[in-house]
Image (cartoon, rainbow, N blue to C red; front, side):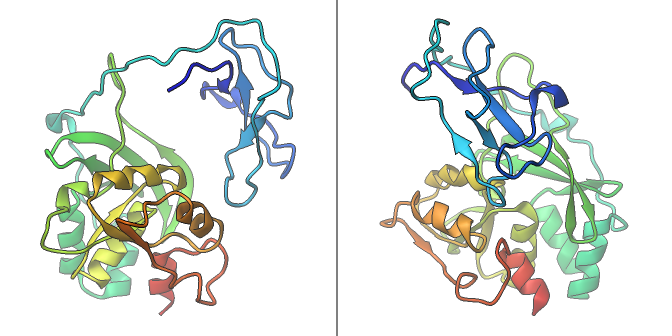
Length: 264
């Protein structure tokens, strides 16, 4: 990676996020700072609402006398499996909703256990496990029925290095099934129950599509609209195929494959 003068400010509380100049949503705008922590002019930044807003302006022509940033080599840490002490409760909202929709508790539980998913009240615990069965990252996300709340974070903290998120479900990938890729963890779980003849993995975010390079090949199912356009520009078409089922459907903009299945 080249040296650079500006980077997006790291999140250090609500005071480091601002009102977006385009969509005007509060605390959704990340500004650019130099190596001394000084801000670029306000118009230079990125809205966190990438699909619904998409504002992004990099300070290419803005000068700063601060030293350049130099990329640091940071050691990857892994989470100790002995510290992964969550249980699986069928009263958790998302789990309960999945059981009601599919009408088969055993299938739902089988899938959740296969992905090592656990719960804490109405929060889902999504572990990211690599091909060596190492726990690379854990997300804790709140759900109200099938709908995700804004509450999302990792309950573990790295000590001297960083956690590096791999594909959700990567540990399940082998040569026995074609791999299908979606964005959200919930969607991967629902699709696994609905179409168990494939191996379903999730990027865990719109900007995590580069993680598919850990796969030899696969079929990509982006969310409808801007996600489809963005992922289409970033995948290696010699290895991966874009599926346009959602693009050609009457599903609303931003719908994913789980929304399509739950509507059937």
